[in-house]
Amino acid sequence: MKKTLEYLWPVFGLLAVVGSFYLLYGEFRGEAVGEEVWADLKAIPPLHWGAAALCSLLAYAALAWYDRIALLHLGVKHISWIFISLCSFTTYALSHNIGASVFSGAVVRYRAYSTKGLTAGQVAVLVVLCSYTFGLGTVLLAGLLLTFQPSLLGRLSGMLPDMLTNEHTALIAGLSALGAVALYVAGSLMHFKPINIGKLHILYPRPEVMIRQMFAAPMELIGAAGIIYFALPAGTDAPYLVVLGTFLLSFSAGLVSHAPGGLGVFELVFIKAMPDVPRLKVLSALLVFRLLYLIVPLLFSLVVVVLFERGRLAEALRNRG
Image (cartoon, rainbow, N blue to C red):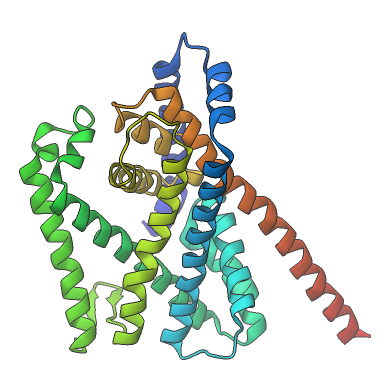
């Protein structure tokens, strides 16, 4: 069954991409997309381009903190911040674009961290804890947004049944999410035993690890959403919290689809969830997001990989000689 799912997930991701692009084509059919989007991109002030770039740096700094936190959990202290940052940056830049982030992230991390003495088991724990950290941030921010602004879920009206998008449901979902985070915090502070669900073992990290997770995870999401917020043209009147909530919904949908970078799925959900902003202006902001959060980091990560592998090859040749 597991091997069957390994083949089916990429198929589901491909179908999600194809279906999303078909729906996006229907959204913009008959409009001069290229000309208007290009005009919107040129209209973004340099100051906003700079702020969006800083938000991207904030997001990737938080992702590097994910690795640092996981290494703290493992008791590994001999690896420098620079190495961790480069490894994390390369890992996420590649996995965000390739898709299957857990698998692709594990491969890149093992290649890098094994040179620092980490075993395959330690790298596996590191990958899982980084995933926990991201999940914690998503649940925490979603819980806060749905509790204090339950109307946000109504933006998915028409995409989901009304029963799931009304404010009462949103409030219940928000409080439930915050309750789950509170349980996680209590489990860490009170040293609860691991929860075993089949082969899944949920461990409660030490308090010093948990506290860092509570800050690092939201920081990455807040930074990533900030890219889109600053890329939206002036006069759209979209508050940051609305952009953040929409980003969480869209990014989560993209991850569930297993499409590389959430391609197509992310854009479709975001555009549908922002009906009060002209669609082409939202599309322009999403292109800026892809440029600063996906494409530019990917180009830099390829340089890092080439330099790293070149160094490893030179070392292997010296040892052979």
